[in-house]
Length: 265
Image (cartoon, rainbow, N blue to C red; front, side):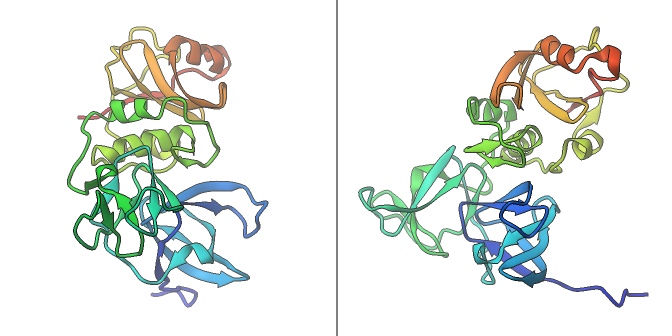
């Protein structure tokens, strides 16, 4: 029997480069995640300039400034393949940019190339060399993660200007055409195939490049058999560290250490 409180929701599309998704409708509210340009967002309620709803990419729920959303949905044809790229009002590099879009943002190209730029259905022009058709993927998601080395750590961040541990995994896998949940606990249950029970100290685990490794509240990607690339608040950036050092910081003797390893087929 349908609930009397059910609301169908109104589809919207993100029209800003990167938008904060808040846990409460206030500027000072905690950032739960971010929405990238071109993502859809279903609005269930709107008041005082804030829209409450759900991200179409990963199902994340929260509050976003309604001004960042548009009721006109432009089906994407391309994605941003560069770490970040500017949106211009005209196809000319000397014009001031309107916005900046990050890696994995999606756009709708609406015409042919001019002066090396492509027009968007939503307005503005972007450098053609920074865009790729949606069908073009980067199968080596480790390489994508490495492109983000040095990006600052940001709680709830999903862009090259600031990213957290689970978003690094999500964005890297997305570039390879692999959908992944937003949070590390959900990724631990859904991404790839589990290697089964693993010792908390990681000893004896046959790690391979690309293995997704999980700790309490944290996740990273194995670069090789003993090094990890991850976004960590320990250095406030995306960095490469020995896996043993990360395991040691979580202290296996106190309930920390390695929780799980999952492998992408």
